[in-house]
Length: 282
Image (tube, rainbow, N blue to C red):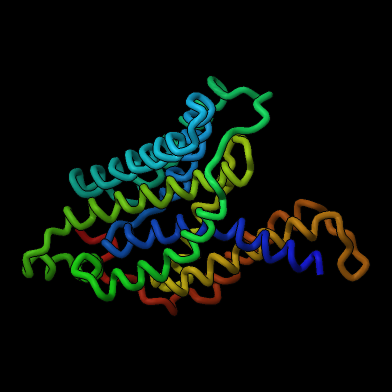
């Protein structure tokens, strides 16, 4: 019974950052901007939250700074793809590379390895917000003018222009939303851990993108996919050091479990989900 409780708690703790990042990716991709840079935006947010919170002693300022850093990277993605027409895949790779390098430099230059912890906002607020967010987004895209414009631009930007909607403006707002949510995801990751370690996002941005694809670019199925991946993350933690059918598997095998589940799920749904028609179109 205790193991089941730990499994459920861990699923929520590890799944909620994925939800925030995946819904952030939802805004970007539903507006027509391919975004593989969720990982980089989350990572730059984690190191920023850590350093600013340690420096100021104020977790609110730290989280705000992390969100600001993520928004900055997100706006850079908008600038490259919408103003300079750079391929969004190339732009996303560049942003990830810059984020990895910047986070590594800041970690080596400014973090104190003896730092025991840091003040943080109540984690329950993050968890509740993440679990409620997909429902709020579903209501937003179905019942508000802004949501309908988001869907219109992501479905057919040329027809949206003919109707008087400006795709660049809609995509700018969508990418700002992506930055906010990726910043919150990074803040939640570092707050859950209680300290910063190098490359602590560990591919969660890519897992979040996979969850978005598995959810068919829809908020509620994306929520379910993120919870499922959170379950596999927690399961691999609990299975480490245990025997299954009398066989003791190496730790590295269990660490691969969330990524194996991702590949299997993507392979099973490949070609079945309908990609937004305007994704990648200028």
